[in-house]
Image 1: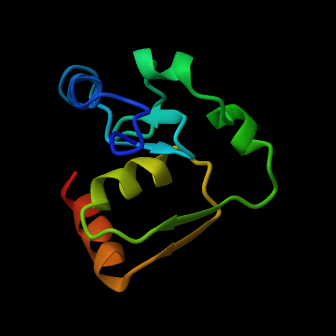
Image 2 (image 1 turned 45 degrees about the horizontal axis):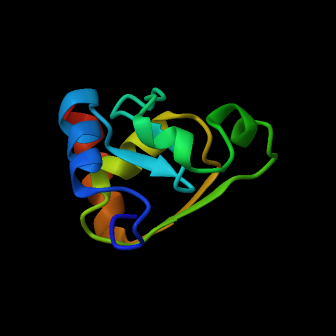
Length: 102
């Protein structure tokens, strides 16, 4: 999102460090490790579906391929929005281990 110019590195850092953001769904719905929505200054600059709107969709499929996404995947799963997750076995193991540790 920073590379695309949507957000500044400082905005991302603030959201992570001060607000506990670990990820987003569809570039819009920011959430913490517990899967709770987090209102950031970035929310006002993007258009997308909210977590509530995503919950109304019968089958939400999430795709996460980067090996650094385990924390974001766990938070996303905890939102209760995702019905199907496509990711690597390594990411899946990391998420399972994190869930056990928390």
